[in-house]
Image (cartoon, rainbow, N blue to C red; front, side, top):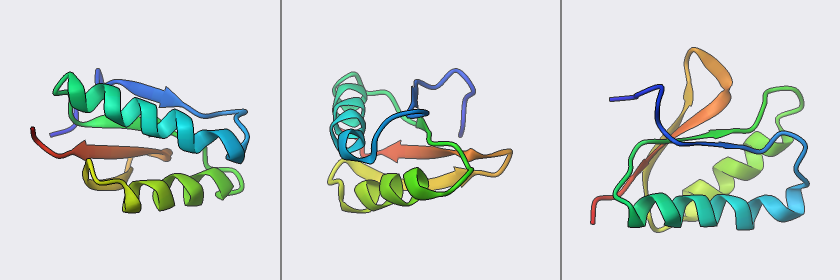
Length: 83
């Protein structure tokens, strides 16, 4: 179940070269605290960040599943694996 109070990572204005580190750290921190789901805000203008974030999420071993937020396509909701 999605909760609007879930932790958010806002990537607006970030360079593609640094988002891997930001997303990875955000996922690891929330996994350690047992928090899921989390939200990654990437925007929806050119889809460059969206594609890169989804590529990272597909390959990350702590990610159970993810999907675009149906109410805001500039966000991705991420479900992390349970400890």
